[in-house]
Image 1 (cartoon, rainbow, N blue to C red):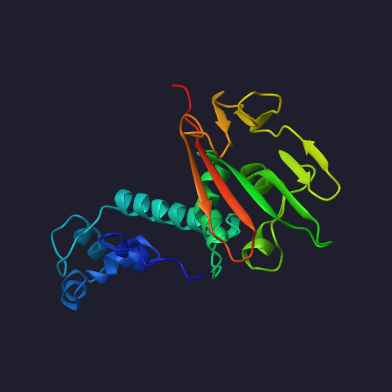
Image 2: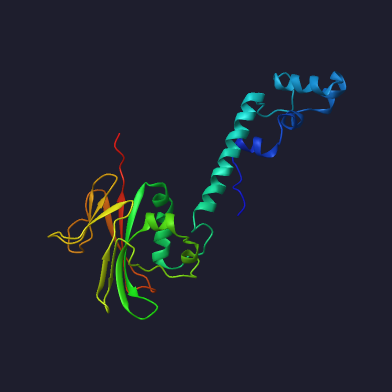
Length: 234
């Protein structure tokens, strides 16, 4: 993917590799004719006495903008490499939703819990709750976003149930603690802000700073996403 073209005055540092090239762009042939010295002509332009018009930056400002532009470019490139969904053509509404939430889950701004009900490769009906942020850190999601692999709950996820074998498991993750024995149903307690996420579909609310979204996907029997916004204590 090509780097984004900078706009405004930042075009200056993108266009010229060095400060000397920038000064030369402001130089007129007559400047060299009278001054007879390239370095002297550059100094005169830098001081603002001559030039062909336009913004003339001091060397310190040019170098600062150059460094800032390079840092921004490297940051964008690093993010593109980090995000498994970057550059993918995604049609499934479920995968689109995951792509939109990927950066926030990787950065810790959000901890999304995904409920999936579907069939495993053996044709057995399974369901479970997945800690999306944890899976992102422990697994390559590029095959999921590219459609080469189907995201399904596992026995190692937050909660898992095989409807045919009646196998049931639950596991804590770095983000959530599982509270299985509860009168109001299954709860997940966020380990960062201690808020509880209630995944009972009959509950009036999934909890503080949380949102429940039902996703209709042609590739899954049922998908529900629970987004929990983590608020750091100040």
